Amino acid sequence: MSRRRAERTARTPGDRLGARLAGLSAVVPVSPRVVAGLLAVVPVAGATLYRVAHNAPGPVPAGVAELAAVGLPTAVAGPAVAALVLAALADAPGERVGLAFAGGFGLLAIASPAAWYPAAAGTVCGGALAVAERARRLGADASLRRACRVGVGAVLATGVGVSLAASAGVAPATLRPIGSVAALVGIGLTPALVGWDRASLAAGALAGGLTFGLATSAPYVAGAVMLVGGGVVDAPLGLVAFAVAGGVAGIVRGGRRRRPDRSLGAGLVVAAGVPGTLLGALGVVVALALLADGGESA
Image (cartoon, rainbow, N blue to C red; front, side, top):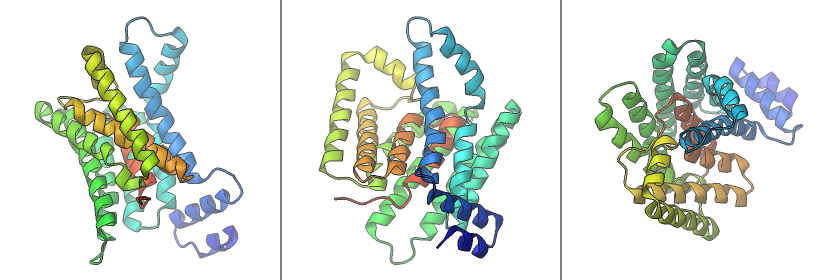
């Protein structure tokens, strides 16, 4: 369907925007989904790296600190806009509404610190609505593979909700470890979303093994990195290694299938870690949209 025809047949503003974005992808070599992935992964990964560097021994370069002071308060705009772009591209009404809900409330958080609570609630509800829409679309004849993909999405969405609830002060001593386990399990199961083959599983196993080996050789450093960078609380080291293995396997599989949006989605859940911040939570919601309906094995 041509861009002009798609715009004529679009019935709602979201349909028209999605048609324009789809038509633009025929002209611009980078697809809107890849652009959305980059908008999300750059600030999420940048914030994670800065937290690790800021808490490492030695001062952070002045230029980096100045850039962080300006960029971190507005970094949530990246995944929020990405969610809005993916909402315009979504076919299912429930997924479209959920992504738009998360993106809109995410932008609201930039206006005032007091908007954090409604933005967090909007992100959780939007992500849950998108996952629920995929569960509804399974139907009675759902395959086991599709059901597994929906299940992994539900686990990741649970990690978002539980982790943000803990950050909001709701039983943090109980919910933070639960959120950590849910998030790490979901990240480790990324191959169920994006697919797998021998090469991707081998790369993931190597990354997981290296993570476990380095963490056991320097436990205090590893514990600080996992807590500060990944937001991991009271989770076993083996589960962290499993998450790294699954995330890397997903990144490699997306690259081998020439699907950069899948690679960006897998990288995004790894960079977000345990989504106890609004930035990380929105990153996971965007990642779920990028990884939707992508699971296949070799």
